[in-house]
Structures are given as C-alpha cells and as structure tokens.
Length: 369
Image (cartoon, rainbow, N blue to C red):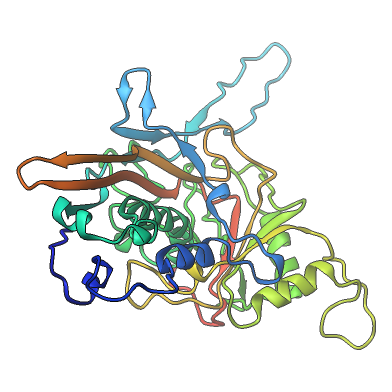
C-alpha cells in the first residue's frame, strides 16, 4: 500500500490546506474496539481461548509442519483357560493430521513519503498513526479467524482454504489426503473401521434448532461418544461452553436457559434442570457469516464445547498453529525517501479431534453428511 503526496480528500490533513478540524475520530480504533469487545447480555466475545496455541519454535528450529497422531487402547480384551496361552493384545493408531506451513503470510505495509510526513499537521499525528492501523487490522483478523472454524463447521473441507485445516487420515491409507469430514458431521469415522459417530444434533434426521430440550438432548448425545476402539468416551458431563451468533434470539434464549429457575416457555412452573450448566456463553458478529467463503451464513447455528476434558496436546481438539509469529517493522527506504511500516504473520486454524464439540446449523433440514 503506497501513499502519494496528493490524494484528494486525504490531503486535508496537510498543514494549511484547510482550517484545522475541531474534532477527530480514529474510526479504525473505534471499529476494532466495538468488534473485539462486543458483548451481548454479558456474553464472552472471544473464541480464541478454545484453541490450543502451537508455537512456531521447535528444538530443531522454526516449525514447518505440525503433526498429530493418537493411539488407542487395547482393541479387544481376550480370555484364557487355566494353563492356557495368553491372547495377544492389540491396539491401533488413530487418524493422523498433518498441518504444513502454507507459505502464505498475512501481511500489510504502508509507504509514506517523508515529504508528506513533513507537511502533515502535528495535531493529526495520533489519528494518522500508520503502524497502529496495520496492527489493528491484524488483530481484527486474529479475532475473526477462530470463529471462522465454526462458520465452516458444516461446509465441505475442500472449501476451507490454506489458512484452515481439518482432521486428516495421513498414514492410515498412505495417501496423505484429508478425511473430507466437516467439524460437525453425522459420519465421523473411527480408526477401527467400526460404526461412524455423529456429533450433529438432530431431530428426525434434521438439524435441530436451539432450545432447552435440544440443549439437553445434545448433552445426552455426547454421553454416547466412543474412542477409536469403541470404548465409551462420554463428553459434556459437566458445565459446557455454548457458542452462538447474535441472531434469531439465540443469545437471549441461552441466557434464559442458563439463568431461569423455571423451564423457559412453559406455564406450569416446571423446574429448569439446565440452570447453571453453561460454563460461559460466547457470541460474536464474526459468527454471522463466513469472512472468506461467500454464501456461508448459518445464523441459527449453535455449538456445545466441553472444556473440562482438555487433552494436554490438542486441548479441546481445536488448534492454532503459528508458523510465522506476529512481526512488525519500521524502517526508512532511502531509494524513495519514504518511511515503511510492515507487519506479517502466519497462523493456521482447525481441528484435530471433534469429540469435545457438538453442533447444529439449526436449519431443521437434513444434513448431507
């Protein structure tokens, strides 16, 4: 991005071009604060804490790839007669996820001619802080992108793009290709080849709209989850996090379910058994539509996340891999007599395990997978 000395309306900040302004607004900063601190009914505006951050640094240097692999427990328990031979125990490996450095940095720069800086009125220095503006833009991206994993939860992984990844099957069939599963799917594969498992909340085969009954049904569904050898791996047995967009009354309904003493929407004073079972409610305008894929606007979607069962290596199964840390630089370009403000980073978001998460797009229509 380059600034020339004469830019029409922007040159009103040049000294003596026009009379001084009595009031100045840094709209970039105001907009960012409104976006980052948005909190409807006291909900948490941030999804970043759901993701485990993986550093770009390893013992061998900067990271070029992150790999995740799980091993299961014993597949089958054998038996023997007295004096007989012990049956051989076996275990299997889980699905392997490989996340490579996409070599695509998110980056921006300003080139500002020194002649322009010398002519700008001193009283405008704060509002024209170029370094602050590109940092604000990057910070906005870092708030938006974790939500994007949920925006794309019901979309085929081929649409994810290089800044997002999905659970893989590298090593199981030798072809290093993705499983092709959505974050929320009716057909999550098990490494033992057994029956698939659904973390999509349904009613008669359709995506279930959010309600107190749907919420409790989702918790019961999570109790049926299994690991890759078919052993019980129940989730959502305690307080959970709910993640919803600020649309269609979802935030209000979630707060009513979590705080009402009586069951919501009934006239017979049924006790609300769901009271206090949300650890927190996360909501953001970033959930209203995908930032990167046109037409993805599931504004009735909702998710439950079990944060109590965090794995030490992948957390809740949601991962942010940093390949290039946030880096800023300011220097003088002697060839053009300009001041250059630069910023860059590479972060890749996605999931390596789906079991901590249940979800529905709330559409009351059938899932494709």
